[in-house]
Amino acid sequence: MKKTLLIICIFLVLQAMFGIISQKLLTFLSRACQLTAEQSASLSIWLLGLSLLLANALMIAVVHAIMRATKNAITAGGKIHLSPKAVLLIFITQMLLIFVVNGFTELLKIPDFIESTLPDMLRNPLCLITIVVVGPIAEEVCFRRGILSSLYANESTKRYALLISSIIFGLIHFNPAQIIGAFILGLFFGWIYLHTRSLLFPILCHIFNNGLSVMLGIFLGIDMKISDFFMNAPMFYFILFLSVLLMAGSFKLLKSKIGLASQKTK
Image 1: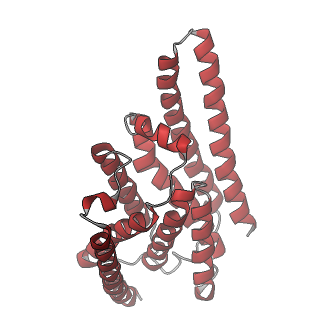
Image 2 (image 1 turned 180 degrees about the horizontal axis):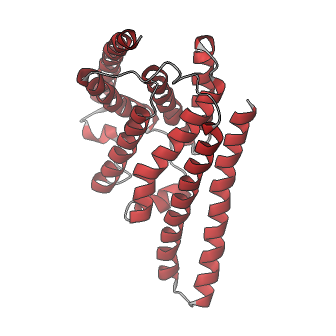
Image 3 (image 1 turned 30 degrees about the vertical axis):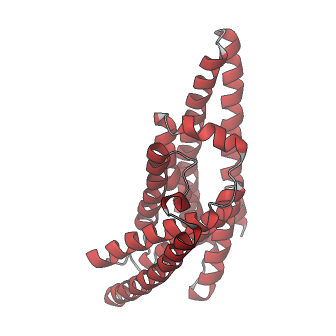
């Protein structure tokens, strides 16, 4: 538990520290260079992207250094080699999960400060790299390799470790519109990590999730909702219900495929 609290503190401190530095630097440069309001707004997005990139990169290095000296009970049995069908099922389940989670949480309002900043972030290369690639890697290293691994002692603590690490992952997003979705995705990413004994697949799933969200935001706009694609609410909820059934079936098949792969590894 001490290691879990340490990692949470590191996550919060790094995010806050680089955020404060970027704001101070923005104020200094705006005054020193006598920037217009438009120029300051553009610079703020670049500094935001740079601060997020550096904070996440440093978090990867720090958490990796902390966990390197600790025996990982999750991966102690060796990595499980998955068949191409199992890998395909992971991403099919992930796609259905994204649809279901977004469908159920799109009624929640995104905070104004995020909604006003997000369009500019999606046009900035540093922000895009961080959101799609560096951020997912950092969060998987932090929450799965760090927190989940530190809470996991043996098979009897698996569910406890998965639940607590996912709750923390949801709450750490702070955005009410993301907390529930992040918690559910945290459960899925954590489950994949526990059953493949590899951080690779959670990272790829997380990158896929964020990348798809960014693509939809760029091409359709952040105000576009999944329900807008359907003629009426009953049809939308029927498709959503059908997606839940398909996701459950896909997840059941995935469990059996990974179970078979686990037996072969033994």
